[in-house]
Length: 371
Image 1 (cartoon, one colour):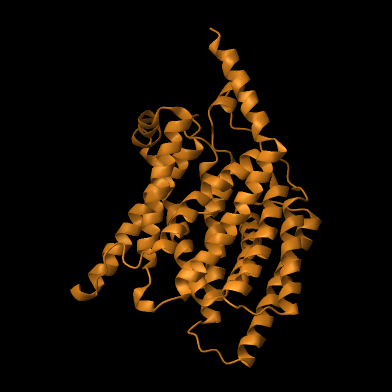
Image 2 (image 1 turned 135 degrees about the horizontal axis):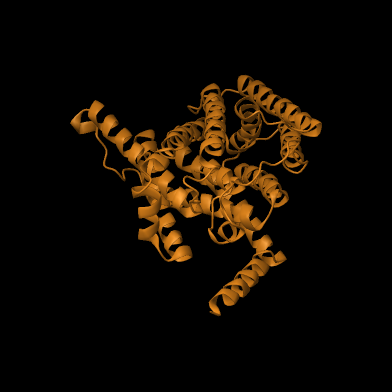
């Protein structure tokens, strides 16, 4: 009978430790390192060596999703101690609810493929800065699909973000047209890939909010089980894409599944697979201020490292536009929402909400955005 108080005491101690300044600083450093490293390592793997020796994006996505699947299983078992029971309750017994994750899985698979096209055609700083446009696309899609309202300050931030992106892109256009480049980068192709990826991310996030926020049958699906479902469908779709690509090729042209995977590609797999779990911890144990600060620091770090590693030249116009973008992202994230919060789903007691380890909206969207 004493297990309940002990459980409450343990939970309060864990929450106290998680909210400590040292823990929050650790999360900040980890997110800065992860965000910067993904862009820099991704750019390095797509810009060095012969194109024929590079890894195939569909193969990379498949391996990454399998790694996420394994990680989600391990964390579900670690946090609940009942992995197989969770799979039975949340997948086998509720196949319709599970199939709802198929649409965001498709959209994020498209997003991941496009992002590596962008990294192959854009410098690391340009990619990092223009990809912040996903805040603008998510806001626009939310207004259309969710009838969401934003404050006047937030609309000013979104407008400024658009101007900042335009300043950066126009500066890069003038620089690329005035200097002859010997590499095979196509900035138009890279920017188009970023734009479509931003809309794909926005539609997937909003869909997840509309359809999957409400639990099915009164049961809240855990954070890691939702990740398991997404990773399963993403891996299955990626496997189908690989089979389709191989079917179109001649037998001599087909590459093995791990073709082109060197040390840095495996590092990128680890960074991508662990990124979603890290962002979940950021949102769960920290706040938007920390997330916005980490985004700004990560852009600065990746830009500085890109100058050293890749010799990327930066202009004052780029710095001015990037500053506008980062300030817009920060103030938008921390200026508050205009619309009141919706009520919690009915049929759940306060204990269910506390103990279910449920996937709340603020945790779902950042997890998906990093898939």
